[in-house]
Amino acid sequence: MYFLFGIYALALTFIAVYCSSQVILWLDYRKGKKGKGGFVNGKKSKAKLSADLPFVTIQLPIFNELYVVERLIDNMVKMNYPKDKFQIHILDDSTDETVEVTRKKVNEYQALGFDIQQVTRTNRQGYKAGALKEATHLAKGDLIAIFDADFMPRPDFLLETIPYFEDKKIGVVQTRWEHINKEYSLLTKLQAMQLDVHFSVEQQGRFAGNSLLQFNGTAGVWRKQTIDDAGGWEADTLTEDLDLSYRAQVNGWQIIYLESVGSPAELPVEMNGLKSQQFRWMKGGAENARKNLVRIWSSNIPLKKKINGTTHLLNSTVFLAVLTAGITSVPLVFLLDGVNFPMAQYFLGLFVISTLAILLIYYEANVRAFFQEGSYSHRLGIFILYFPIFLALSMGLSFHNTVAVLEGWSGKKSAFIRTPKFNIQTFGDSFEGTKYVAQKITWTTIFEALLTLYFLFGFIAGIVVGNPAFLVFHGLLVIGFGTITFYTILHLNKGN
Image (cartoon, rainbow, N blue to C red):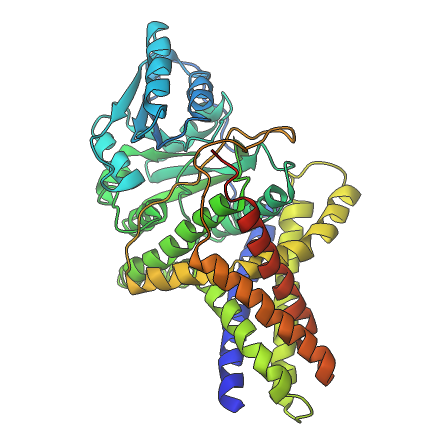
């Protein structure tokens, strides 16, 4: 019993440390909101349309984006920036009709006088990182803006971001993601809830606390010199954006985060696409921890940055802790029944405190944040309704994400699987009959179904033996794994 409880307690302790690091970010975030954290938002006015504006290269890495590539290109040419001061490179690794659709769009805008080019490769070596690396030497601009295929930046994006590069120490400017299809479904609402935490409390908290930040792969601008100085794009992790961000900051470059500048984008609308995105992010995070922790601790950056950077890179490992705590808690229903074990109560209290800490942070981002729409009472009501569901589904993703984390730490390599987008913006849109949708059940989905039954057994056992200590935990796990399994199967074969 003691060995099993020790594993459970160790997992809960890791979760508590993770939650503590999140609370520290929240404190820095609140401190910055009071004007003590050095927020830059609002301190720079928009650049004026003058001959002094720097030349900018806009890079659009795409792969088989049949449904959104036209929207992407149409949006980019609307930039409120002198036409002779920017170029657009579509880095097209596509292997389907997207190539021809893109070619036609490029020809259309070339005829209108835009400096736009379709850049293709004979192979996908290095995936997105490889495409960016090979295209860097083609960029005429000293500044490079990067957007994924589903993004729709506003016309003033460059005017909002470019002025910060007047400071020669600034290597990157990152903006906040917005969600054009947030209200589409329960799945998109819950994703928005999580991403809004990252793009408020986490990113702005790190910026306000002078910690290491990350470029999020899109909706940001790089100084070309920074990319070169940091060693360029590398494809040995699935999150090349996080990797280059850390290498650049270790070399002394700074990243500016603009919470006040939003960049609209499309959220994944089907579970299999969301899971592939989560897998890439979680595995990439673990790969970056494996690759960059030694680099961080051997560098000359301040100790606080080293500690904060370490907790950041270890964030994805929290899913391993959640899964471990869940699996070990089921036999503890029986082992702790009627046993006078004070330590058990202590660690159960740790679980409650950790949950309250997450509740606080998500309340901040989804109710109090300035960019949230609607009245306070409406936002609060929506939050109260959806937060328990979000918590359950996050737990339900723990097995899938744990597989990703273990692969990342072990060094196992896998392909970069991009998240398909279908131009879903309003409730009436549908992805049925489209390409790019998963067609078969994977072994991880089967295991998620088995875990649903396992935690259901634990929940019922707690009622039968009269041990209510884990009822809430097991109830959330049943809902989470059951919902993940249901939607994964439901969204199969929706395409053609």
